[in-house]
Length: 448
Image 1 (cartoon, rainbow, N blue to C red):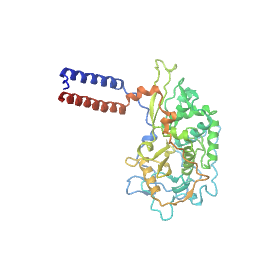
Image 2 (cartoon, rainbow, N blue to C red):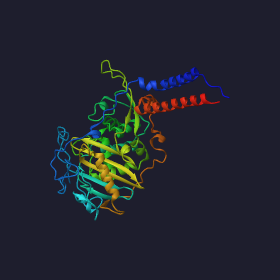
Image 3 (cartoon, rainbow, N blue to C red):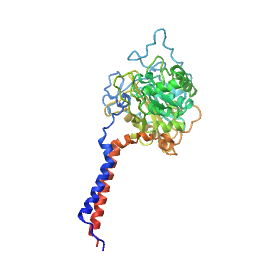
């Protein structure tokens, strides 16, 4: 007969387990949560439309679809709303890019209104973007579009070109020292600081996950300076057949002459997705970004710790099969986005340009409806094509970013332990362990 444990012994066992759980959870509970990185406007913008437009959807009150039938943006983007595109003193604005003839991708893509396959159902309602395009890059078919070659400002989606140039010309493990010029960049910033040390990999992750303009500047300096980098990005765009695209800044901030098109955005992301390293970077959901020392020019400043970045691309979290893309927003460009989804052996890429997000009808909601429309079209449906052989989308069969060495460094472990999800898992695991010990104690006390 097995001896029954005494009540004090059982209590001592529970006390020991409780103390162990407290020791495990204490670091995450006792330390204050770090201040999260600011959420950029391109991830959160909601507004009420105020622009004149010709079509209002009865299903999405207040959402308007802009009339582009008359090709208002064939040569240049919509008029700017601020002074960001005023040339510097002594300089002149560049002339508009020539309009290719015949249109790249086929004659039908030279139209500027809705372009749908024969016999197709009406386009989805509530799509605010002035221009958009749905393509199956597995086959190279353009499935449907609106103003596909209209010229629009890319905003931060142009960082897809910068990432490709950096991956081609730089080594991922090269260490870069942050400068005051990096830290002073306008718009979204990841948090480069003077004297901080960052690998090119860190900078690319900051560029793609949080759209850091500071990272764009730091990468441009490594590539030979802003002017050299812009030339490299334009050369790459031209080699891809993206002839509506002219880069005027590495980050996508508005500048004289900047333009691209829904069609070109698809070409640019298609090329990026053929690079396995790009895919691993772009689909990383979270990554550690290093801190930097106290600034000597700020009295009483203290060291700035690193933190964990969370990818702002909701496609990766909210849309099954999402494999990556890039968000964008400026006052002149409004919202822009291009993203890819894999479904049933096909890879769909959808671009959206010059639109807004609404409460209850976000850009992600609009993306979902465009994706569902593209999937619903019959096999072989097409209104045009993407040029050249279709480059294969790089596989993540090796396990994605974590398996490829893109996991957050060990120094991020303490931060991960403070993450709310980590603490929740610890708590749940602790409750299960306590229940198991209690059950074992009770079972033991009943044995004979």
